[in-house]
Image (tube, rainbow, N blue to C red; front, top):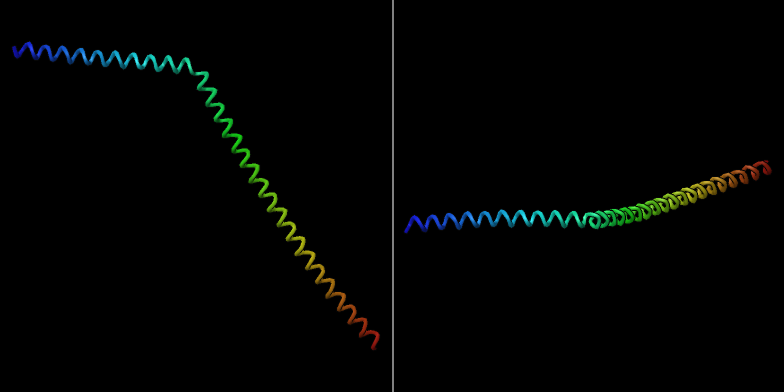
Length: 108
């Protein structure tokens, strides 16, 4: 009786293993078929996502470039103001000196 029970258990185990192999094979086949069937759709979705990411990167790049441009313009304006103030100061000092020299010349 013990031998029959063991033999039956072994047969059941072999059947279970065979069923598991067949199920795995069927699942693998169906997944491959589904992927093959949907390949165009998947590729289109990937392309759409890549394009979307590309557009977002371009948008961010343009924003950054505009920001840098504005910073350069502001720096240029600061330099121009600094130069104008320096020039005005120089001209005022030169004018004062010239006036003083002219006054000194007329006194002598």
